[in-house]
Image (cartoon, helix red, strand yellow):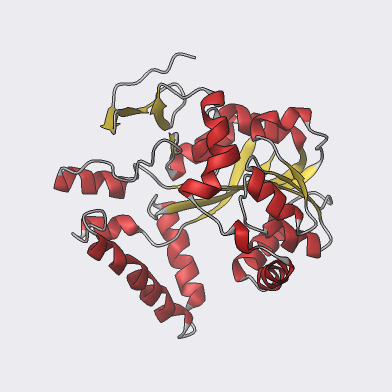
Length: 304
């Protein structure tokens, strides 16, 4: 495929282009699929996002199960999917979830659950929860015995793969009409981030290489979903860290500044949650998402 572009950014000897062909930003040239296999099969959860697999025993698993069933975020996802889906099927496919046992939560609710996870370590870990795991890449979906899925979760995965259009097209084929897909990706090259770059003549420090290939905004992700047979039905976000950058708190500049971010966000959100205003906080994040702000994109869509 020929990728046409005019605007681009350089970082660490990589070029990120504003691609007119794909209509979202991505690394160029796009890496070959086989270049990424070793990274995600063997290295990702040991080197980039290490997980304490050596501490996993039966007691550890039971503790995680108990925590998962009480997880408020998992509950929110479950009830939102139940509200949005327009099919009687209760089958869940979690793709590239790493060590997150969202599938166990749905399994406990009586759903059929399958997971596609390329990491050898993470796949073995998830099997300890009684989940059916295919230790392979999402690009192999069409060769798997998976059909009539009513909910697909693609959380912080789409930025890592070489061809998001092809992957979403294949996902659409295995879903039931009226099924729900949930996508989470970083909100990168947003207007807030671009304003920070313009004001401070800064480089795009959120570019995360070599594993982040694609860079989405709310607009470009919604358009990609529409091109692959989905209709966006809900969006929200989390705290807009670009506001801190624009205001002069450059958490990229030093470890001291970075350490301020977590407590700042926690105090901000706790001020709402501990005073009976959590619904207001929810609406605030939904409103920011409508304007394209927020550090991450959380988007639900339905297969039409």
